[in-house]
Length: 269
Image (cartoon, rainbow, N blue to C red; front, side):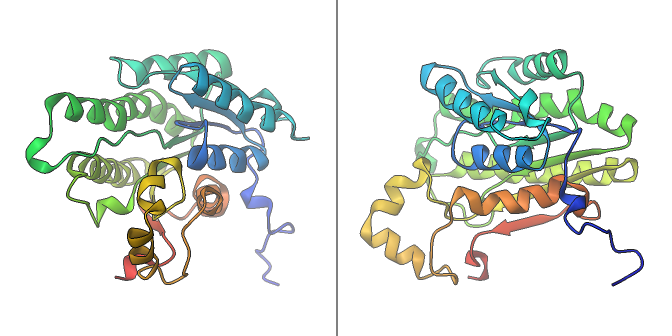
């Protein structure tokens, strides 16, 4: 064993004493990431968009975190913010900081997609996707990242999409917003990497979620897509969690500005 190897090889994955804000964390990919970070010892701010169903789902995530024997997750809480509203990101940051005092990890997972043919993209659909997928996230980063740099430790993880590289004709705005978010991660990686803050983009492939249910339930499109995934199966939200934990912990401290595909090899063509 190398003289520099840690006594506990899993120690660098621990997040004890850290606080993470995961947007869109009430279900599926966001939920899986929140539970993974909480399982590593982090206190989690579980963001949801508001509404009875969203509130109930988020409460379930918090209950799972509180069931952990670790002290960090026991302090987790849910926070509602409709990102389509003006200043929602800034308001959420202020609320989480007021409750927790600090945020060490930001996972930008919340997004909305409104499929429309290119010729039929409406101003309302464009503005909603920009507000949720970009504006609120920018406000969160502006409010939280500088303080991470002052403390000398922080993690920014943007959740992208295979749409960044393989945009569907009806996903012009959504794919563009994910590509821009990826660019932000690169810019932050360059600006803050020397101050202990890493920024990376994680791009899921075909994950079995409610958002993808219509496409993946169609036998023809399901078979067509499966043929193009070397692992031979669709992903599950839990498949994203391990990569997210790596990029949000000290185990990934030297990964900065990366674009990580978690897609079963779909990007191989």
